[in-house]
Structures are given as structure tokens and as C-alpha cells.
Length: 257
Length: 260
Image (cartoon, rainbow over all chains, first blue to last red; front, side):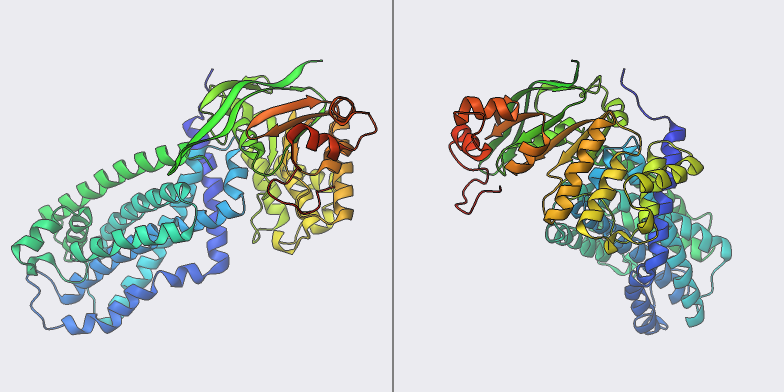
């Protein structure tokens, strides 16, 4: 008989794993600040330049920039989530856990859940800082934005963990993530909307799923809940998370570590 | 005697840039209930790889195994519930406290929070860790860390305990303590499967030895029988015996003194 853990067991195990890593994150606190540095710099030193620039779409410049920075935050902090596993692998922690009956899916989901929780806290700080600079946005729109970036973070973190299980060193891991992240960030119109792009660039950017998320969050931030950009963004988030979680879980469960 | 572990033609080949490498080349192995089996071989002989297959961490590319009454390929979860495993690197998070590592391990074995806390206390008494429960793992000495690794692996009172090079890096005093601990674990009813490249360790601890080299079993028997057969007499040193079996010392490509 091949026994697979029940959904309840996966859920209970995920909470155990979440608890451990949430505790570690709270203890170090550096994690909280670390991911925020880059978007905060853009907010403070780049945001003010956009005040009076025509950005080719509806909304105040802060309503355009802050959603982009939220996606950037999710993109960078969750894509590097796998780093933690590389260190744990060196200590033999992954092997030790994988020899117990704990659900291997939960070892992934619990960590991912921690990353999502961390991202939501960071997003809140970023938005509050944005408000201090002059961002005005409806609360509902901001909350919708949080949901979209949380889904994005879950997708990328699970892929990052699965990838980290397959490489042996940070030297193999970081270049791959960097070479995906930077073009993805530029091509999804995080800093400036793709509405400003020449046709060829605009066409390329339509192949980057994050673009739809950025546009979706921007629509939410101006309170345009009926806008097709929001629906498209939500759909992109849903498809991306379904695909990445399925792939991430499969790779993670199978990896020999 | 009944076998608690048996393998048939167990093999692992992994691809590299220079072509496939056969790390383990078809091992037939039996471990009897209640014994300490010493899996002896030079570094790189395939000991750890074999262990990682038997503990469900690596899928074999060929062959079958029954571990603690369950088929390795089709019932890995049932196998995991019955075995304990201590990797060479251990498996402790330096930033975590001893107590929280023990409790979480208990939770992974489906104990309730109260049960897991009680079991952590019990294990701490049993393995002389009580004073250390509120320290972080980073603050432990090598010997203490090893005891904690073993305590974690004993959480669920496994029928079979795998120890991968358990005394590597320990000072002589801690090694002697650990040997005693391993004997006690066996006396209390747990079968022990341990790998080592230290000949004195194999000689002192193991009821039976399986010698591997280049991914294959090259000899097996009690230390005495091996000495008799390969070393010429029961009084031969295990080192001479080992060289007679493998044609080289226990540390391949090293002319340094053997680990005796």
C-alpha cells in the first residue's frame, strides 16, 4: 500500500513548518528590513522625479510607482527565498526532516507561507511610506493589491525553493535568479508603465506574466475595480500560482536531498 | 534470526559530464534484527550513497530493498516511520534551541505538543542533554551535538537506526562515550546500521562487518571471521585484514597513517 498523507496532515505539517520559520524570521529582524531597502530607495530617490512627468495612464505618479515597487518587492524577496534552503542543506537539516514522516509538500508550503506573511508586512510598510510621500489610494484597492502580490510571492518562492533543492551552492543559485529577475523587472514596467514603451518593447513585455500583475495592481490603486487590467492581473496571478505551485511541489518532493 | 533489512541488487548510477558514474553497483545485503552492522569502506566507496537510498532520500536506479518490513520503493512513508537516521553532517539548525529542535522532531512524528514536550524531556534525560535544553545548537560541543543528533533520531523509538560516520571529527573521549551509547541503544532493542572508515571503530562496535569498495561488497562476516580468513589468523589486525581485502588502506589515495 502506498500511503499518502491526508490533506489535514499536510495542513497541520505546513503550520508546524510555518511556525518554525516565522519564529526564525522574527528573531533575526534583518530579513524584514533587507528586502525593503531597494524599493524604499526607489520610493524616496526616484519617486519624486515622476511628480510632473506624464506617465501615459490614469492616476497620480505615486499610484503608478508604488504598485510597481510592490511587485518588485515580491519579485526579489521571494525569488531569493531558496537561499535559506541552500544553507539548511549544508547543515543537513533538509535531509533530517525528509527522513521523518512529515509531509514533504508541507516542508515547501510552510516556508512559502512564511514568505507570504513577511511580504504582506513589508508591503504594508512600503505603502505607509508611500502615503508619507503623497500616495493616496482607496483602502480596498490597496488590499486587492496585497492579495495579488501575495499570490505572486507564493508562486516565485515555491519555484525558488524547488530550484534551490537542485543546486549545491549559492554560487550556482544567485546568477540564475539574477539573470531572470532583472530583465523580468524591466520588461514588466515596474518603474514606468509600459504604455510609454515603443511597440516592440510593449510586445515583448506582454510575454512577461508580471506585467499583468503590475497593471492589475495599478488599476486597483486608482479604484478602477471594473477595469479589465485588474481582471487580467488576477487571472495572471492565478495561472502563475497554479503552475508554479504544481511544478514547485513536484520538483521539491522528488529532489534527492 | 530475522532480517530487519535486506536488499537485492541495489544500485545507483548518476550522470556526470564525463558519463554515468556507478556509485553503488548492485548490493545484496542483509541486516539481522538486534545486531550492530558495520558498513566499512574507504571514503568514496559508496557507503553514504547506500545509506541515503536505504533511508528514502535517494531513489535507487536499480534493485529492491525491504527496510523494517516495508518495501523501499512503494512504501517510503512507512519506512520513514520505523527508521532513524543521523547523517554525517548531523541535521541541527545552529540558531535553534535544543528543546525546540527536539519538540519539532516529535511533532513531525505526529506527537501532540504535550507529548512532544514530554518526549523531549525524556530523551534529554536519556542522552544526558538536560542541562543543554535551553542552549542553541551552535553552543554545543561536537560530542553534545552528536548526542542531540542521535536523540532526534530516537524520538519515535525506531526499530532500525542508521548512523553515517558517527564519530568523524570527535575527540577520543567523546568517541568512547559514543561507542558506549551505540552499544546501549542496541542492547535496548534497536538494530544499528553504521558506516565508518575507522577500523578500530568497526572492530570495537560491530557484531558483523560488510566491507565495501568501489560501490561493491568485497567481504562480509564477523570481525573475527574476516581476520581469520583474510588476515591469516584471528589475532591479525583489522588493518592488515582490510588491506588484504581491498589491496589498499581505508583512506584511498592517501599514504598518511591509517585511521586506527
